[in-house]
Image 1 (tube, each protein chain N blue to C red):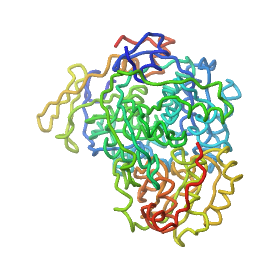
Image 2 (cartoon, chains in turn yellow, red; image 1 turned 90 degrees about the horizontal axis):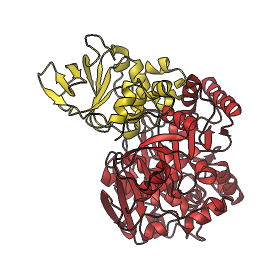
Image 3 (cartoon, rainbow over the protein chains, first blue to last red; image 1 turned 90 degrees about the vertical axis):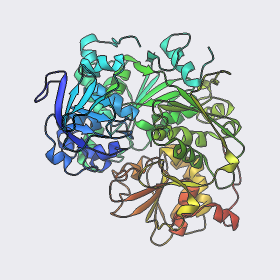
Image 4 (cartoon, chains in turn red, cyan; image 1 turned 30 degrees about the vertical axis):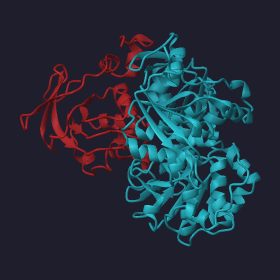
Length: 176
Length: 430
């Protein structure tokens, strides 16, 4: 997970803030259903219905910052996939919808649950995956994020569920 | 240890005596499904891994979201699914058959099963007493290949409903009322277990409406115990042999209990753009409506169409309110035709479409214009859901939706009953 300006365990990037309740229809709208088999094309519209500027201006290493219940709605795995394809290094939110959260881990997109209420658009953020904290370099504030369950950490560190199976050929998950 | 329905089913599939909420297990999967929006990505994962020997006992692909195909790109996706089914022996439910969740209830899910599906409303099958949950394409691909999935055992919310449903009030009004109280994330990661006298008295089509929308409160699944109603439903599908009883143990541990008295419920509507934005229909009365959709995996069953027909028979839709009726499956379509319901809808000025997801997903068959208002019997009113982020979607029961089509605006359907304009329910169908 090396990113511009960071080591493997440190992600550094600009914050793109979104409000509460960002649905998978905001991220990958149903009207673009026909693009689901062309993810690079679908990624050009990522989060378009929440912020039309996002897909045009997002840069590799940027961080998506949501409020409550990020990713609610459809099971479409295309949603976290196109966020990742757009170059986003991680999604931070107060809380995540269950299926989106699981899908993000399965496709190797870090999703971090933390207090995002004080983060503003364009804040410069540093995510320290090892220390479990997000540092807002613009404001100087630091917030902890909830550790991933060991099972999800294992899948994420293997690079996603398909890579996990390529490696082990079966579920090879830690207890708990 | 006394167990909830979810805990019982998961323990049996993890090969252990009992499980506790919060525990992580690898469980056997009985049925894994995907649809035309999520299936191609699952197939791509299976091909990348070279896992074309599917170990899951039943794998089914449904072509329902964009059926028949409105675009060449989607025709190609459909072709991908058909070829994969030919190659692997997975079951294909092609364009004429209808919505995956309705088809799963009719033909595939059994009480006590673990069902995973690459569609968030897979939880619908919980009405049959199955542990059914939505996942992404990759999880479902792995489930198909290995016959296993990993699960975190959810905490359960018990939803106890007593009393009797009043005239004009349907299960849709109950589940919207519950979601309005819990909030769109109020049950995230939890199982919702519905029970009590009013649920025991509820026919299967209404139970399916309840469990269908569990995910709209963030829940992992919704469950109803398997009882005589379940047995009769399965028998009517020619599957009585699939029945077995399932109930929670007395003393099972619930994280939270919510109680409702059905008699106190009123017709409600979820206003744009979130499912938890729930208001009594009467308080939204007068809201002009451009289109009404009756159908979907939430309310596209035969009895839902009968409810709509009670309002629409002998009436016309309002002149500037389009009415679209989309039966959930071919079986529903055929039965509705046999009963003369489709004729009644056409007489009322409706367009009756082929079975499938129809206009609900925003792909085709009823995309809204900027600023337009739709009353839909579906489960989601998110911005952009029906293909246009500038449109407004209100969610309601089939009775409330049909009443809106006639009035051209949102109305409380009980007003029709009060003035004697709503014919009696007549024969009760389970």
